[in-house]
Length: 164
Image (cartoon, rainbow, N blue to C red; front, side, top):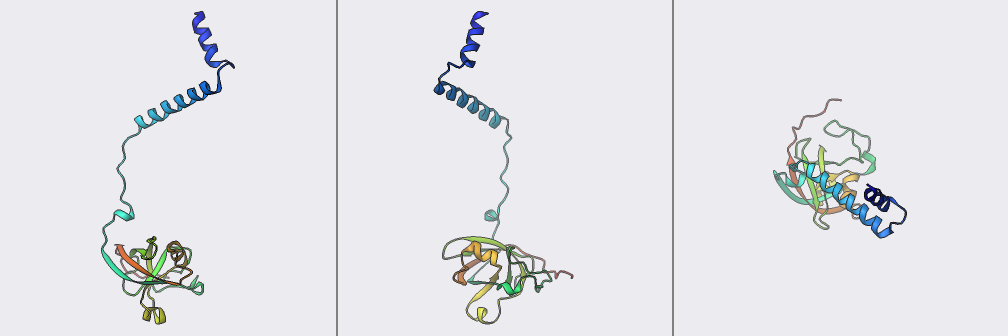
């Protein structure tokens, strides 16, 4: 009995060196992690946007909306919000999800088509998509104003105009 009492005193007492104490904490933590991992059930990875099949591809230039359009209705009937990842395309149905990749820096962002465009000068200069400011910032194209991009359709929308 006395041996057990002394053993407890050695492990719990103030004479234990810092290295020994740290080693004990590490061992306890390692055992806890091991037990936690043993009890975890395996999970199947969900399909992310990178794993989705590409339904259509286009190459061209991207521009972005002026702040003037914030709060205004779009062709789909939705109100434009430059803080959301949304875009305009001349022919893709509304609700289509498109991955836009900047060919200059390989950054990409997924956007939802809610408007028609680009028109005018931007279209004549090769723009195939108008991005919200938020999406353009994620691609890093704000300072240039226009950049060469690849569009990949991940999901076709239903092109139903939203009721006001």
